[in-house]
Length: 137
Ligand code: THU
Image (cartoon, rainbow, N blue to C red; front, side, top):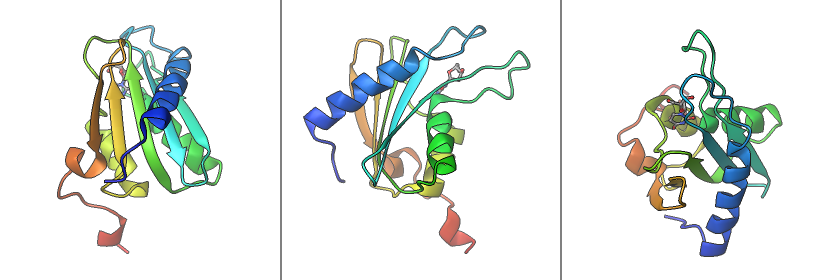
């Protein structure tokens, strides 16, 4: 696993908390921010965006991935996720699958609670025996 350095992890946590300030959460009031690092070195920030009809709600992680891909970057080296809750917000199943489309199994996935307590994992740990692009192509 290509672990994040402490300095880099702290920097990405700061950026994810900045992204969380933009969260649009009139229904859940549960704010999430994500900082996705491209292999180019560029950071893509995302927040959750909710909808009155609930289902179209987009998680912070997917916002970050879709921003990156729409800007031309498709390879990523790490993602850091923070939330306003008292437990670190692990990415939901849908976001894990979306990350799987573009990221390797050993990519660091770090998630934190509102007080910056972190859990360090990898995509492969979060989504084992997964189905991905190479199964179709
Ligand atoms: N949410 C995220 O943004 N990321 C996650 O990994 C978990 C859930 C959002 C979706 C919704 O706006 C709110 O948190 C409550 O589920």
